[in-house]
Length: 418
Image (cartoon, rainbow, N blue to C red; front, side):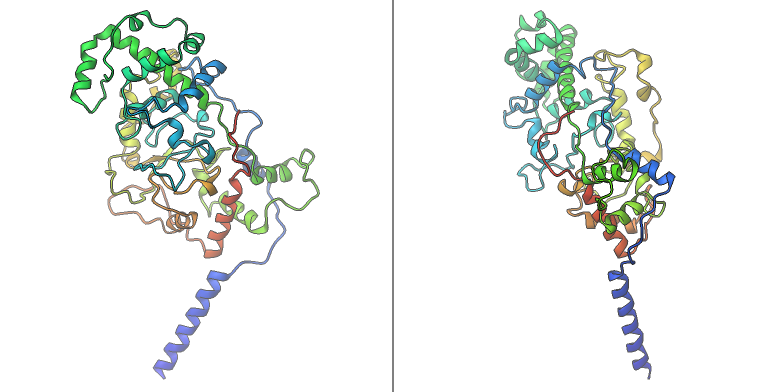
């Protein structure tokens, strides 16, 4: 009798599990509250982006953007003339690194689409401007790997006319001085650090000024890169601006499951909107998700990124910034050492997420399904801080979230411009 009862119970549990996995509620008529409609409007791409960086007077300069575009694809801006910015930020892949690329990095390459609208840059926020960020990979030994003397000499000799058009006369001191090919205060090679010290403060300052201008040009180009409308954006028009939408009166542009996923996304149950908000689906802030990352210590993330940003000679308060000190509010009022900053990583944009795998800050997950299952259980290792709470969604709800996220991808992969 006991065995028979156990078989019956086991069968019932199996049936229940199958039901939970395959269950999908009957379709309902979608009704959006005024509060929900306001949220939807906030997620729609704007007709015009408003950007401003007081530390870069050339951010909206078309000639600076042209110089930046040329530099972005120039492999000469690397130690062995093999790597360009475009090698990892591939235009044909939404300015991220394709999953099947031969290039191997220990971190995920974020998209550049819309990047100019953020206040902090790098995964840990160690740069407070787009131009300061653009300089970091150039001297990073696992990325471009060169030095600022190499880059400054190359740019002044390869692009003299365009440089002068944007920044004025070429620096006479540098043009009349024989500089070492490789010299930098941040080089991993002692000889190149010695070369930098040998130059003296006056020449160092002139080199840094041109180097900063290289970053400002790259930032000007990146400030022309923006995501394009998706089916999701057109659906928002359909439900919030029906008089302006060409799809008025037609079939909803999102399916019932996609709409259900959107409802979950902006709900308290889904919690997604807490961090992934605004037109780029990112609040630009830093949060700890405790995703396992063996090669990064617990002290990494925003906790150390803050100190790096404050010490950066190319930050908003630095000598090479174009801003007044009072304009550097983000840096002046930066949130410093706090346990909640340990392991906190910048929230990525979810735009074009269907085509930008792998996911998370070090590419730990290869599919969206894996990401959603991780968030659903949100385990927090003992002794660590996490900003996540388990979603505890049912399988059909996870599927609805996933199909909604797929609507955030563009239908064409031509190079987007502002």
